[in-house]
Length: 184
Ligand SMILES: [Zn+2]
Image (tube, rainbow, N blue to C red):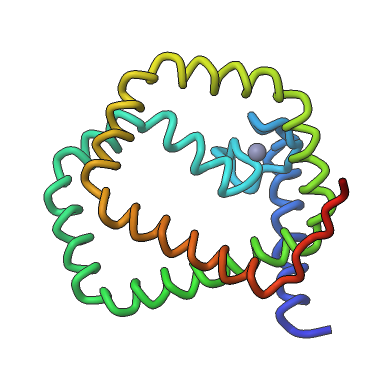
């Protein structure tokens, strides 16, 4: 056994004896945990509960302090950011990569499940989504027609060129194929 553990045991033994001597019984913390207080004032089972209750009872004080020193805090944060910009950027980048990796791994491991979920969602919302799309189209019909006309007008040459190229490519492909046998 290390001396550290021994020391700790020794100390807690003393505390328990102390508590008994002073008639300090177990208490119930606000979180519901039963604990043996180490001092007469101790009303929380852990530092976490102490901090939580400290914040609640001193909320006004803390908020007042923060408000009064908000400029100082802001400056401090800005200074810290400036001084550590590279470090912070590197950290964010690394984290982003890590997150993306984690998400990709999750998607890969659960691909089937996810696909099923999505299919099920689409199946149950098919009507809804068709209705929504139809309503959207109906509501924006004018707008859409105008937009398309404007787009066509603005890109007329490019569109015609594209269509001509496609037509030529199709004809070329068709000429290379054996013509289908026509019955009749
Ligand atoms: Zn507690």
